[in-house]
Image 1 (tube, one colour):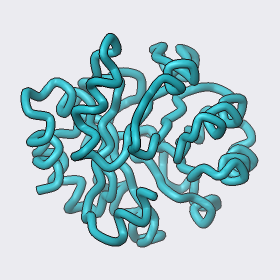
Image 2 (cartoon, rainbow, N blue to C red; image 1 turned 90 degrees about the vertical axis):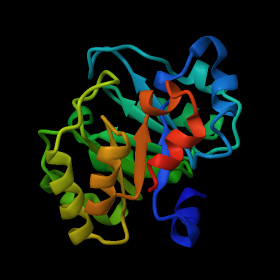
Image 3 (cartoon, rainbow, N blue to C red; image 1 turned 180 degrees about the vertical axis):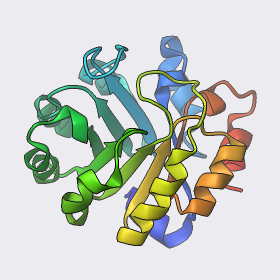
Length: 217
């Protein structure tokens, strides 16, 4: 769904991260951005792969949205989450190269379950580590902060990775997550990014529609 939308009529897609939303009124928060966003970004952390613990399938099951759910697994052994995420109706799953000993097998399993298969690259991780699996990927997530917490400062190393990925496979969707605001969004768009993830910048804004639209300009 989000791939078709991007190719047809959107130069950049916006994926608000619910990690920055008010969990006491989560569906209300999501409803407030649903008309303006393109997908919903879900940051699942296990306190092992990253030093933070967020949420898992039980909370995702409670989310009410028409937006495609884009699940970023910052966890060890991500394969154990896949079946349940597919049953919930998650559209895409992103795993980390560093977190999976059977990387290719997990990506293949994601696709077998009918979801888009995506890979995240940490700031210190080279694009070269995923060169062999690029042909089977639907999207690469370039982390522009070190994963684990929201509200961090954008790391410029991400821009070179965006350009490199677009040179290797121009039609591949490149997503960027971390420190995204109107200024850094412009840099990412110019480098060739297709999808921008933003949490605090959107959910803490007084006018969420204006915040989202500022990332497209």
